[in-house]
Each structure stands twice: as structure tokens, then as C-alpha cells.
Length: 91
Image 1 (cartoon, helix red, strand yellow):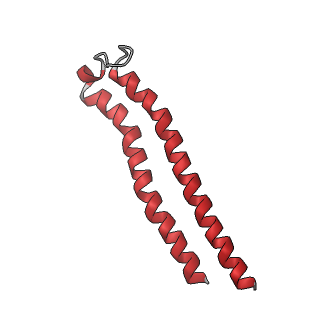
Image 2: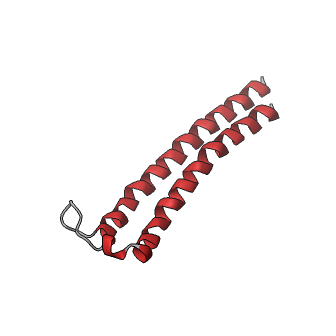
């Protein structure tokens, strides 16, 4: 039983580590791009003529929701599998 639970935990970590890395990269690219390429970030974008910096900043909201949804669905699925293992063991 413990091996199966540990396998599920490793599986969760294998999915969440790249997601965390992608989220951190996405969030830290905004200040870095403002430092290194400010002339590009102040140009108006194709949507409502707001600057690319504001556009990128507003994109962080749906990305946050996406990563929250990804973690929630993964954690819920793995918790169900762990509960099934506990039920099998108690029988």
C-alpha cells in the first residue's frame, strides 16, 4: 500500500514541478522584460492599444486561474486514488 501511495505522490510532484517552473518563469518575465527591453514593452499592443507591459500583466490573471485549476484537478484525482487504496486496505 505505501508503495502505491508513494508512487502517486511522486506522480503529483512530477506534474507540479514543471508547472511551478513555468509559472515562476511566466511571472518573473514581466519585471525582467521591463528591465531589459523597455522600448518593446511600452509600445501599444494589438488589443485596445494598451502597452505590451499592461497586456502581459493582465495575462497573468488567467494564467493564475489556469495553474490553480491544474493543481486542483490533479490533487483531487490523486486524493480519490489514495482514498480508494485506503478503502481496499480496510476490506
